[in-house]
Image 1 (cartoon, rainbow, N blue to C red):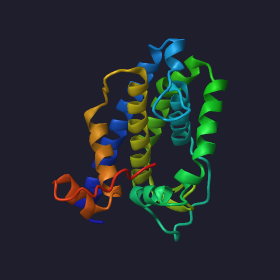
Image 2 (image 1 turned 90 degrees about the vertical axis):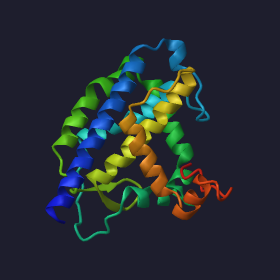
Image 3 (image 1 turned 30 degrees about the vertical axis):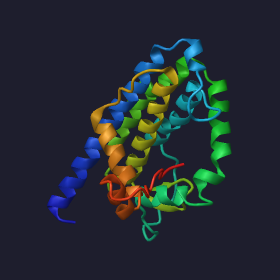
Length: 219
């Protein structure tokens, strides 16, 4: 990797960390103003209320701040965020086979948590995770659960940011609010989802040359 490439990678990583920080601040701000009825609002994710979405995305801050210790085999295949998402969402992929288990875990976790604790995940654990991310090398390796492969922190961060953006949009929708998401986070998420899509079909559909849209790309 040239010095220019390394600088570009470092800059992208810092920008993504900043974007994630801003999105998690939005999660914290929204949660701090909710009444019990709003926490129980149904969302467009079947079976998930707002509290369940908080519990689901809330798994990320603590894991990023204190990732599980695991042996990293430097000779193992290193995959990208796109590789992981395509694999998870392929027929028979984890996004399909574990969907019910993930939903049950989110609902159960929300039922066990005080609402203030759900907010604290983003208000208190979030900044700790962001600080940890800032101290990590974007090209250092980390196992990604369910993928049986390694990825870099820069690529792992892309998935966490995308999940945080997609689900905060679910929260806004469930609460009947206009979406208010930081622009940089929306842009990063759009870039990742576009990369997951089959490129020729995406270009053809986006330019009105085909009705064969390659969407959705995620379950």
